[in-house]
Image 1 (cartoon, rainbow, N blue to C red):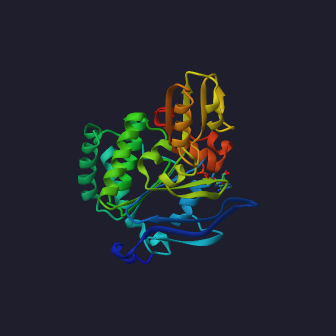
Image 2 (image 1 turned 90 degrees about the horizontal axis):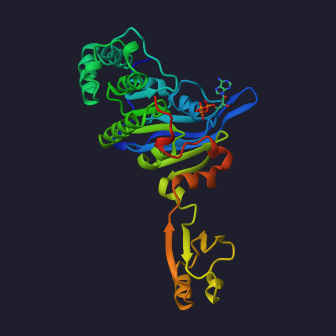
Image 3 (image 1 turned 60 degrees about the horizontal axis):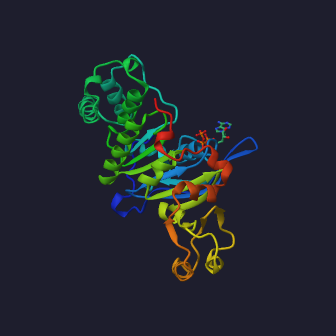
Amino acid sequence: MNGVSDPVSPNHLSYAVEGHGLVKRFGDFHAVDGIDIAVPVGSIYGILGPNGAGKTTLLRMLLGIIDPDGGHRRLLGEAQPLKLARAIGYLPEERGLYPAMKAVEAIAFMGALRGLPLREGRRRGRALLEDHGLGEAADKPVRALSKGMAQTVQLLGTIVHAPRLIVLDEPFSGLDAINQGKLEALIRRQAADGVTILFSTHVIAHAERLCERIAIVAGGRIRFEGSVGAARDRLRPQVRLETRRSDGPWRAAVPADALVEGNVWSFPLPLDGIEPLLKALVDGDAGIESLSIERPGLHDAFVAIAGAEAARDMVPAIDEEDGA
Ligand SMILES: Nc1ncnc2c1ncn2[C@@H]1O[C@H](COP(=O)(O)OP(=O)(O)OP(=O)(O)O)[C@@H](O)[C@H]1O
């Protein structure tokens, strides 16, 4: 390597990560099949997709770990991402630390691989462990830690050199709900300091809570790119109406394709809004027992965008993820 290059100043950079027309083939199989991606500087950006969607392959290409068969990418303005090792933190999908190493040494060692002097790495490592409630684990060998603790140690080793861009491959998997919440907080703190975070996940709730922007990937292609709100806006809000009377002239105002169970009707919000229906219900003396209008969540949007089969692998919420 020619040493760390001097990438474009962060002040002049709009996107921390850019990929255009990225393709990766394994034999005849297109794992990534023409992906464009642009991650704004300082944003939290999620790549959502089921197993085998191509998320890991995409991240590895963006980081320069594998070369694309087509297309090009820039990281922090640099076309050769490996030159930027010191500015980047990467948590790969395969976790692993040396079992005999003390937690604090493991963090310092990971920092040293990214150019941080060991002494400073140890100092920061202790402080980070302390901040994350693992102060007492600092001098324990990694093999004595629980799986969740070891994963947190690896994560702290990923950020100890204060990178400008953090790339995390499925960072939440293997963590219990409490540690998932702590990781969300850590990601938010990093972003508040101006660091760009790019992560992949199959847990929709994390992306829904954390991300300014998301890419939904399935079958090696981007099915959606934009804000979480824009994804949710792909679906119309859902109306649930319960009436005391089951029939009357007001029935004509309920959309013909509504799902009916007893006196309960469910249907997408009509294009002209709820008011004309409300008027018909009141004028027709339907007796409104309950009425709700709910904006679909990101999980429903994911199903609509990527299809039910892709959604089968996705975990909607944090509680449904297996803990460590
Ligand atoms: N080195 C490789 N050789 C052959 N096929 C590969 C290789 N790496 C990945 N693939 C295939 O490419 C597809 C995409 O894999 P990738 O790991 O990128 O998906 P993913 O979205 O990260 O899913 P997962 O969370 O299951 O890893 C999969 O079908 C996988 O089997």
